[in-house]
Length: 436
Image (cartoon, one colour):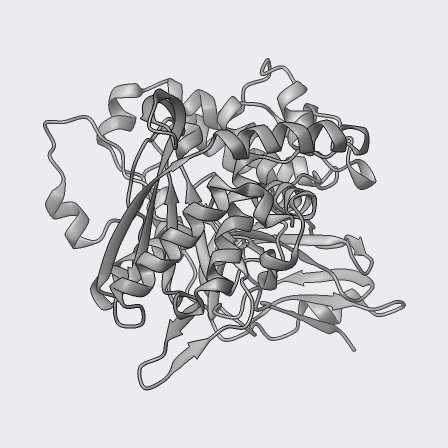
């Protein structure tokens, strides 16, 4: 009997998703663990692996289909010695919200010939075998105009990863890139997506423009941040912190860890400081739940990571109980896998508080939006050399950064937020207290 392949729930909040790309075709044999498709959830683009062995008998949901409900049958798998023809005649699932209007529109407006060539070339290329590549590698290839068929993969099973794309020459431009470069005037004024009335009303035909459809991730970011600002009354508290002792300790730690190939960043140490401050001031390590207040017994820190197309917050669990080196290893691994779309749902869903560091981008001060349902987020600015009055009253030069805490005032009183900021400042300015 054929096996139904259903749209998976790749995160606890996922109700529907976009079937971004099939990495198999009908007739392909798959084994448990083989990557079958890329699915765009409300959090990220993630890979969907086969659980069973068999032959892909019928693909029921086309790639690019949006609004595919969790549990919808998206493909049928024929097991060994099974007649594939019976699989092909299997009834299709209840129609998910697919992009039929968009496909019809593209058929009508076949103006850019190169784009049409790309659409017809994709299936032809797939007949010779699927191209195994990570989501990040595919996005980079699109941006650089590199044909993945011409790239050799260095990953498992010959899979193309980020490093392979970066090392490749952009000699063979993809048809998509050629289409974008050719009729610049037309592309700028002729939207290629089906627009909502609200979007159409905002267009100014006098200004060259393009229209892009929002990804599931961008829609979720917009919805959650709007929810945060509308529902959670934000209170902002800022402190200036001298970093010199922390920077000196970091240098000593990295000298010792060099043989192990571990490098601790300033942000890793700030994650530890925030976690310890939250344990010291548990009134800020909470979630407002309407009629109840949830208080957490440890600090799981969500670290904001920028990825192509949006933002994700992988979690360092029990950060207050981890050493600097353990946090460094965790953040390095989580950050790399976040950018490749390989995080598991439990690795970016939850957390008790967040930290967002834009200091590496030269931003000296900003206020972050609370990451619901959390009640606390810390915004970190760049460290700067400034004239400073030293502890003995003399005038000197110190490396000073600004840190601003955003708190949900429904759950956190201003005095408790101030205590957290003071505790955070004390840990950063006396970093040995975090290892004592």
